[in-house]
Length: 58
Image (cartoon, rainbow, N blue to C red; front, side, top):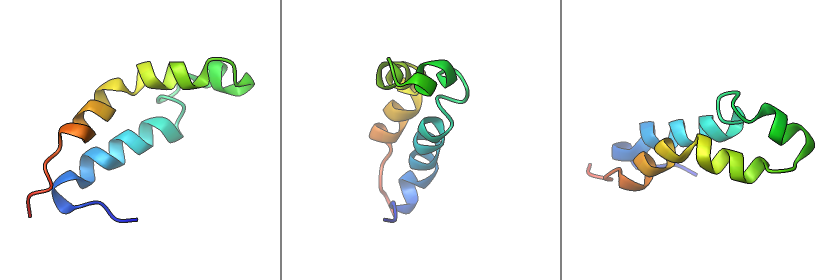
């Protein structure tokens, strides 16, 4: 799936945050699964907000 050019950087950062366990902040919570989603939601909140706010202007 491709993102629009105007939001590509923001989408990439939001995904990178989640794929890296909140850039390491959620390694412990995600290792055992307990609280992983909640930790990622908090650790990646700024990246997700930036992604949601990004414009798809060409």
